[in-house]
Length: 85
Image 1: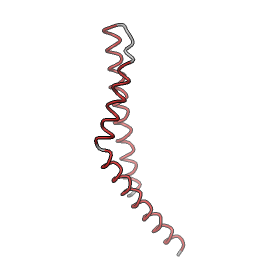
Image 2: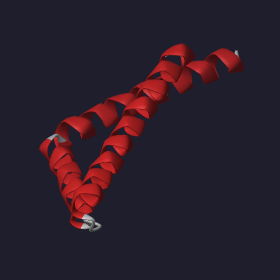
Image 3: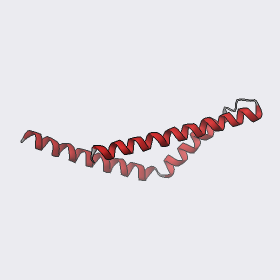
Image 4: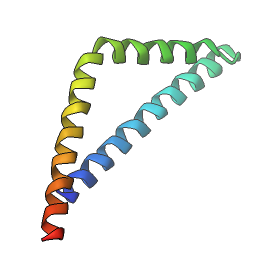
């Protein structure tokens, strides 16, 4: 993978994660604004949702991580061979 692709993926991941945090914060703000009570159970539902997504796609995620790891090792070996020659 080229460094440009890595940078673009990192920026996209950062923006998406920031948007997710913003939605969580917005949900907490709405709950507090309407009820005037801090709803701490909302964090529990966020964690349960995250577990559901992870375990629902767990095998796919692990296979993708393994593919990326193999590709990275192959790329590093190629770089090592070109620098050593």
